[in-house]
Amino acid sequence: MRTKVTKVILIILGGLFIASMLIMPLTTVLVYALRQGLTVFTSAITDDYAIKALQLTLLTCCITLLINTFFGVFAAWTITKFRFRGRQVLTTLIDIPFSISPVIAGLVFILVFGRIGWAYPLVESLDINVVFAVPGIILATTFVTFPFVSRELIPVMQAQGREEEEAAALMGARGLRIFRKVTFPHIKWGLLYGVILCSARALGEFGAVSVVSGHLRGKTNTLPLHVEILFNEFKVTAAFAVASVLVVIAVIVLILRNIVEYRLKREKG
Amino acid sequence: MYVELRNLNKQFNGFKAADNVSFGIERGHLAGLLGPSGSGKTTILRMLAGLETPDSGDILIDGKRVNDIPAARRGIGFVFQDYALFRYMTVFGNIAFGLTVQKKEKRFIQARVTELIKLIGLEGLERRRPHQLSGGQKQRVAFARALAPNPQLLLLDEPFAAIDAKVRKDLRSWLRETINKVGVTSIFVTHDQDEAVEVADEIVITNSGRIEQVGTPTDIYKNPQTPFAAGFIGESIVVSDYGRLHGFQATDGFDQAVLRPEFVRAVKLEKEVFPHASQHGTVQEVYFRGNALELRINLGGQVVTSHQSLEEEAFKVGEEVSVLIYRLYLLGRDSVRLMENASIKSDGSFFI
Image 1 (spheres, rainbow over the protein chains, first blue to last red):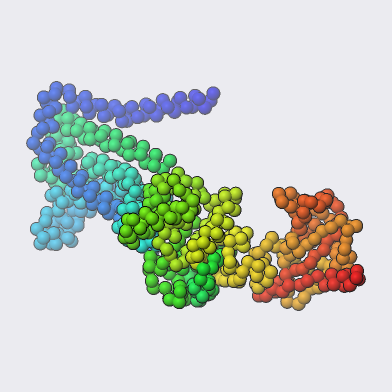
Image 2: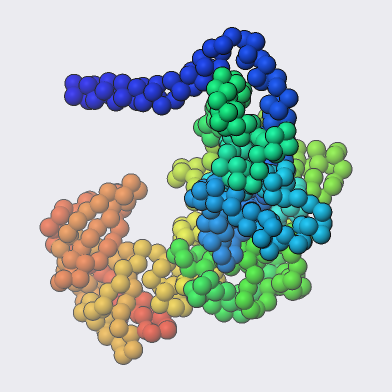
């Protein structure tokens, strides 16, 4: 009897919390976005700057994903399949972006590549703008989202162990074949899950990007930054309209995530 | 010698996993590395395969030093303890893998895999995935996969450890027969002496990184050469005050003795045959062991173990019986000596 009451109370509490912290704010976004009618909504999201921002956000997201998937797989592979000195240190280092505030991450890039930075002469001589330009945004986003893929893969690969790979290697298979035939089939759903988490974070990244972007409209403005600018200009409805685009993307990602998670569970079971 | 290890050494963070290991195996033989866990037997196997590099020493296969030959080109088939089957490939794909890597012709692969599947008796299961197989079937697939590229040496790491008792017995004799049929030189690792005795032509006993003894199962059983081998083989119990047992004398340099149940015979008092060699004891416990009874008998403070056939009249707990100990292994610091019951002879002459 007692446990039944506890159960009901806990469910109600959980429901209330989710409703007030998640569902209510998200619906508010949609309600505010559509408050002044569809025309205002469409004009806000088809605005030139909004589209440019969306393009930049998607571009950043794609490049970040490529880089992080590639290095994430390598990092996880190195950490789980080899024994070497400093393995623990490497594992810890990979997690740094999780524990550092994104603002600091952004500042780091300013301090390295900005006018006062030690790498400034180098990028200058190569004629690349990093700070207040697209490369800086991509760098910052990559930094912040780096751990997602490897964090997702490390436990999966650890659970697999090294024996299957050793068996394949003993029969003369080389690294690439071993990865393709033995390792990859095992990690593919975990990898996809990591990629989805990474892209969700990359699309929404604000703090680090805000520091390095310089907020140049149509040039270095990502979607989240665009929302902030609109809001600061008291264009509340437009801000919410653009924000609703991000919400829609988030919901799509959420659905994808659940599908992958389901497959992942089935694979394990 | 077909496979030979010479003075192999290997340390892991200061822990000696292999300490001056030397032994050899004849071509076509099936050898068992037997030892308690942590005795270095798996390390020896992995060094042979090339999965670990020895710190020093030579590994020779067929007269050639293979230390610097990479694992893949040593011509070794390896059966892992947990099989390590490729879980995303079918039975066919698993067995064919080594041949595919070698870029063998499709028709050849088809024929070879079919032949091996027949050998392991899994016809009709070619399309199954490893998780759809029982433990024994997985074991057979792992075996076939290792054999597919025709290795010159087959290594098996605890091949029966993950299989339940009933299947294990069948699989043991199956493995022995199949290896004999194929004729490949094989070395397997085990911590189970029954397994080693039943399967191996030769047993190599390992203990804390060292080789204690190499020999046939009978040899190892009858003539243990080190105190460890004497104590490890059989259901041995160690007796410290063996001079008090009738028929045995304390000997200098041998502080302890090993006693196996089959060295001890207990009979009812009225059936006593060798009165001088025997002594009286009390039955302390009687255990039913399925095919025999196990007795714990107290001989003036020293408890010894003996077996009794189910055909004989069972003893009761607390009953006084006559106990005859045929022989003991005396343990010195580095040596073992067999000691027969000295009084049996005098008793014998008395009877004649």
